[in-house]
Length: 372
Ligand SMILES: *[C@@H]1O[C@H](CO)[C@@H](O)[C@H](O)[C@H]1NC(C)=O
Ligand SMILES: *[C@@H]1O[C@H](CO)[C@@H](O)[C@H](O)[C@H]1NC(C)=O
Image 1 (cartoon, rainbow, N blue to C red):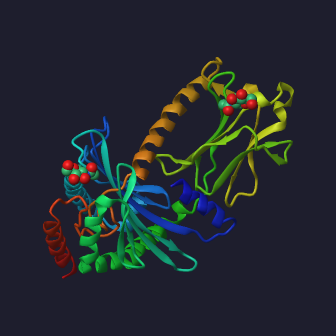
Image 2 (image 1 turned 90 degrees about the vertical axis):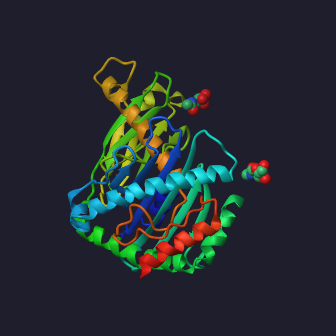
Image 3 (image 1 turned 135 degrees about the vertical axis):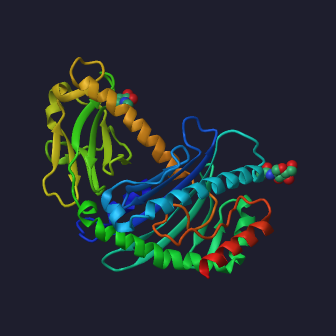
């Protein structure tokens, strides 16, 4: 995700047109304490629009405008689909464990799929990747219409799927037409929400008197933002600076941080340093000057202690969810789960299926049902 965001930042400076994205993540896991064994999350432009997990067994859309875009009975169909995928992903995970000769322990199987739409050029792109235990397993090359096995254990799935012409033609239809059409529908209804600019609150935090000072910005949107330390109003500080990852908040906004190693800075020079936040579409910089009196910390007795204590667990939680969701893909079928469509519950190709012939015939049956 970070690579993706980074490329985004580099490729769209000052451009008003935005590449819109929809991403569906489905994660099946075994033996992860306090984490549902199946989680599906849908993102539009990096913002969570829907969620299903095996604990609640309900699909939830996150915003009223998303419901408006997708229709009333859509949630019911998502809940039903979530239940089906939960079972299927679990079975596939078990099969993959066998393929890897693993009996127990923590394992994950993930699918990440979706599409992009450039609303200036009209160009669309589709993606479908599966991962096992945090590593790529198999992915779709839509242009060549083949599956790429990233692991030797994925090769049997590749052969089956490559031979499944009905599944491939469905994938092609789904990723080049249905997925972008749904994305456009959602973006058009949610334009005022998705195209807004929210400025963050920015705080300086410090764990111990000798720790780096963390400049933390949270609540900004969109994610096309940059943050850095500056000296004497002009020069970007490079030495002793450590950039944190950009992370999503639950409300769809983002947070990020940048650390400054203050052991390199003389006390009388502190006021020459500013933390600077810049976001696309806003001319003025947001700045906070390095100043002991505004730093929130756990050891210094000030009301800031409360804030620092709250911020840290949220960061940890978000980082965990982000990690679990990003790194793991999952076997099942190509268009699945939280797709923005009623008809996309389709191909049930499963790299985890132990009997390849059975897998193929089941897939084909489902595909035929779908296509007819
Ligand atoms: C799993 O075990 C079988 C039989 O012992 C062996 O042939 C195969 O190479 C093993 N696979 C892996 C991924 O270790
Ligand atoms: C900060 O800089 C000092 C001096 O170069 C170094 O010893 C220390 O390890 C650095 N701290 C961090 C957290 O990088």
